Image 1 (cartoon, helix red, strand yellow):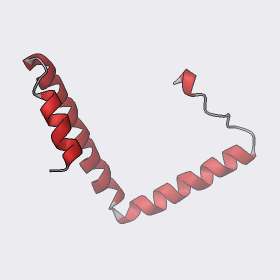
Image 2 (image 1 turned 60 degrees about the vertical axis):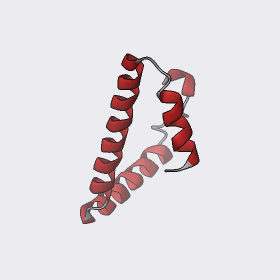
Image 3 (image 1 turned 60 degrees about the horizontal axis):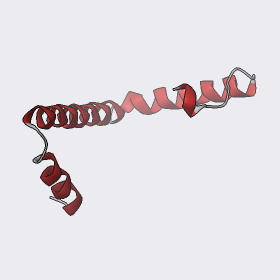
Length: 74
């Protein structure tokens, strides 16, 4: 275990039980999500799909159908 992860868990143990469970659910959900994305991106067809989406995004941008990202609007 890395020192940073150790520190996070030590701090989490000081939280009330309900908050610890909330943190645990969040962490497990994130780990499961990361695993699903890794599995999806490891598929041979993923590279072709991502390349096609990138090409479509470039075409849309060049055609003026995109706008700058505004973090405040997210």
